[in-house]
Structure formats: structure tokens, C-alpha cells
Picture: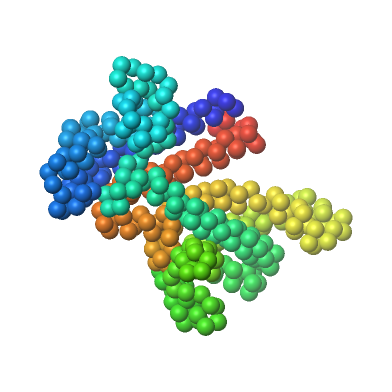
Length: 351
């Protein structure tokens, strides 16, 4: 088990190294002067040179790439002085001359526009996106499993056909298109009945209470983001339930006189949830990435909206940091799921 976990960990490191390389190459061939983006068009030559020196922009591309890796790596080498300590907040491990091998959090550099550290920006926005993705996944799971069971139990009836039609529609509709339609219907046409807005942030400012959470602004982006995984879960649950209901032990349970609900929920559903759990683990990471355009459409203050806005303003450190964070979440979840499968079913390690 330990050897299998180490193998998956090394595989994850290789994937992240590839993502970092692609991100660095992609955003270093784009037009524009990062130093001038940081300091503004009216900045003086000395300020521009200071910024170029800070990010290593005055050096060759290979050296810039090494410095970028050094900033991202938790185990890195830095000059042992006050300036480096305030910048990286590292823990000294070993001193080598005037430099030190240190342990630190990955440094994602500073925003060109706000001058703030990208890590600080992510710390503010990621929890909002996490709340959106988590609630969307819970909504999709509960409704999807319910409709899938209902469809399987009433196979070939109008209930089954309606659930299948809904699932096909949910899979076919792009998120940005579904978001526009949902925002228009529930936030504008039927707003007098729903009490919802077309757009709005999770946090809003009240002149008397200060910053408060506005939960109603979560409903429409949650519905939009959860629509596609809901449709997938409906189809997976229906297919798995039909397979399980055809098994011999289900017929035996019926012959013993067990009630319909007991057969469905205590015996069949329990064994039909394995593919659904697999889908949930994969879709949660996808929802974090899929929230980009959904958040932008609804004006939701999360990681997606921040990234799209940064891309419009050519604020590349924020965009790069967001991409690397999403990639890290994908890799981490895949490793955890693979290790969990190997723990539950040892045959996985032999595959």
C-alpha cells in the first residue's frame, strides 16, 4: 500500500511539473512588459528596473524558469536576509554561505494591478468557490440519485422518459448558456416570486452590520453549476439500479416477502452507489474549474470571476496562480481517490 501511494505521489509531482512548465512558457511568450504592468505606464526607469530584478526579468529565460520553480517549490534556496524573510516567510533548514535552504509555502508572486500577493487573493476567493462547488455537488447528488432511482423503478414509463429527457438536456446545455437562461428566468422574469437577483456576490456590505453573507445569491449559480453533474448522476444511478434490480439476491428478497422500499433503499441502492461515488469524486474537482464562467455570469465573488477579470486586465500572476491551484486540486483528489480505491480493493494495485 505504501509503495502504491508513493508511486501515485511521484506521478502527481510529474503532472504538476508539466503543468508548471506549460503555464510558464505560455504566459512568458505573451506580449507586454510585466514590469510596466506592475508599476504603470508613467513609472520611472529605476522603478521598472527594480521590478525586473525582483522577478528576474533581466535574466535569460532558463534562469527565469529556475527562479519561478524556486518560488513555487516548498523546499527552496534564498538569500538569508530580512527582505527575503519578509517576502517568503520561510523556515531555515540549512545555511549555505550567504544563502539558506528553506521550507516555505509556494510563493505565487504579486498581482500586476493590485500589488497584492497572489496567495492572499486566492485565500479570499477560494473559500467562496469551494462553498459554491460543494453546495452544487450536494444538490446534484441528492436530486440526481432520487431521480435515478425513480427512473429505474418506473422503467419505460412517462416518469422514466421525463427523467431521461431532463438528463440529456442537462448534459447537452453548455454551462454559460444555461447560466444566462437561469439568470434571466429566475432573476428577472420571475424575480417577484423567487426574490432572487440576476447577479450578486456571496458577501455584501450592510451599512449597519458590515459585511454579511447573502445566501440567496448562491442559489442560481449553484443550480447552474450543479445541472450537468446532476444529469450524469441521474443516468449513472438509473443504469446501476437496473443492473442491481436484475440480480438474483433481489429476486430472493422479493420471494421472502420484503417490502418494496426495503428492497430498493436497503439492498439495491446501497450496491448501486459505487459508480455514483466515483463520479462525485471526479466531478467535485471539475466543478472548481467549471465555476469560472458561472461566477462571471452571476457576478459571484469567487476564484473564477477573479481569474477571468485578471485575464482581461493581463494580470498574469493571478491567472497563473489560479491555474496552478486548480491543477493541484485535480491532482490531489485523483491521488486520494486512487489510494482510497487501493485500500478498499487491493486488486487495484495489481492493475
